[in-house]
Image (cartoon, rainbow, N blue to C red; front, side, top):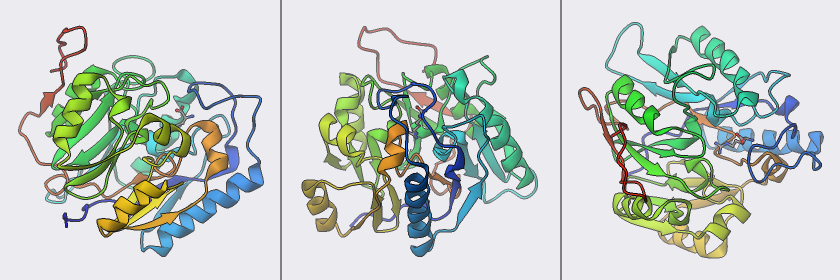
Length: 311
Ligand code: ARG
């Protein structure tokens, strides 16, 4: 049995009062199909209470009225702590630089929220200038930071992340329009296993992903986009999922995981699910991410053979 993930036992979530579909920036969003606010709120509370019931504190951020997608808390930023440090910078957050201007105000509130709580903020780009980075693309896995690039995060963001955090960053190129964040296609389960959807990536990155995960649970694009089952969170041996196809459940249970399904279908109308709604606050450098002096970026060669200055 693989060693449990060190992170995933403390979350931030953004309360759902402002959630609605006001624009269309991913294939799931349709402004003519609006969520039922009461059902969305009940589902959101059910998710928060499930996490709390599993022992994970959930800190709640108030949503901005002008930011209907802010409920997808994962995209506010990547929180990383440096447990060995004392003083400033011990807790830090790399704030997202959203691809679409409709979401950029969220960062203003995120900055305030994190700063008030003693997190040192940094940016890879901001207010439309510099590379985009959306934290839903980033995961610690086996000591490295794995980051999806393409639809939302830019290749150049990888270099900023590597240098800023002092870690090895492994970029993966996303090509599937409905898996526009890596968290729709990748879910680390423990230090050897992950749910993976190689169909989300170009050929070289799909190969890299399968090499990266010693025991992958492979799902196809259809399973990923119709069930959002990769968009799950893991608390030790428990996987909190929006849905779980039988085949996926059988594998998870055979590996010793317990599956808890929470229906967040109203929140799917904005194109996000369980993982998008939650942001782990307990990723630690030195434990979940190996320190690499000066940072390092690894990125598979693009399909057209071009190399880029990110690597
Ligand atoms: N409507 C949001 C967007 O398109 C959904 C974000 C989903 N979040 C995630 N971590 N995948 O940006």
